[in-house]
Image (cartoon, rainbow, N blue to C red; front, side):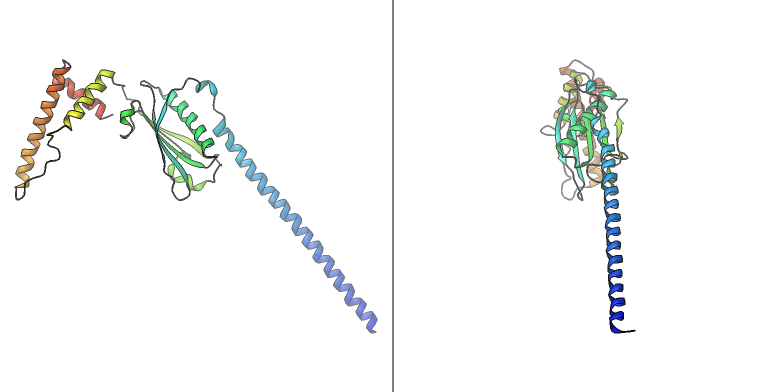
Length: 250
């Protein structure tokens, strides 16, 4: 075989390999573009599915809602955007009212956070004075599968798994305005000047004996307070105690 023929064969092989390589690259690029398009379509599909969960609120249920967000705290952790809200609702608010208010707040918080919030915890009260206490009306958690700890499992803006979990105080009986007044007066008086709750035993005292004396002192103090408030509102001491515990234990 002469040199010219050999050179032609080698050149042809190079061109053939080059052509195959270009075809392979074109095929790979095509596959890559298809995969990217499928991924984007899947993400958009998931995002679209989440929209009705947030935006499909029946406006007829929110037109007459009355509530006040008395306190809002950013409780975000580990990059998961979370908020805790304390909400005051009218006395006698029913379960359906709480659910409609929760939906309304969720909608607003999602929009306010630009679709970044992943967990909301709402505490409901029927008095602004109680917002630093455990909830008195209800609690609502909005999170993936209704669980606070699962906020890390989803991406921002994807609410497909989100749902509400309610803890409604079904047995709660809303006290009257006068009962609230009586309760507040008793509570203030119990913590008033001269109260024995923060007393400490004297140095070298018998702690056991001192504790007995202190317990008796506290009982006397509480009885004195109950008697004073009961006399002021013309009710029995027993009734004053019932009112105080009824509200305190809600």
